[in-house]
Image 1 (cartoon, rainbow, N blue to C red):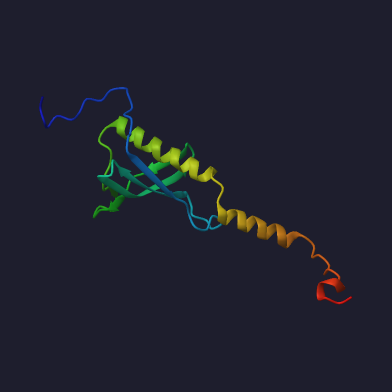
Image 2 (image 1 turned 60 degrees about the horizontal axis):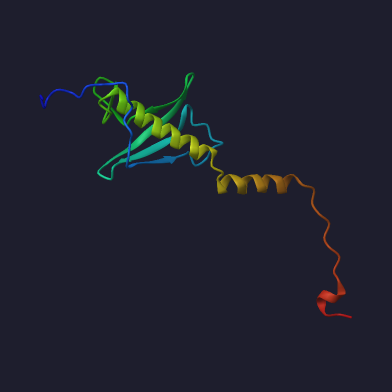
Length: 138
């Protein structure tokens, strides 16, 4: 087998054991971030990490953009990327799956904001009448 020959591509999508995906949503969801939905970091088997993966929205739905840098030709070039179609599909599927779970997960910050809005929208309650028994008076 030739060591320089790329691996054959088949129809099976590789299983990604040992892949840890972390999703980072924008801190201020009410601010306009354009098409950016969030960021992801992927740890492959504890031996290789890919950070600064962007998740964007488009007409076809969310998609994953690998980390890139702008070259002298004013075009963006990937810093690292999967080398096979199957690996790209598996990696993007893992990232988008983790993104969906993160979006569906209730956030504490969101719950606090919702509770504050609800409390502000309620009419103020009248102060409670002092009870003499509370002060020790009889």
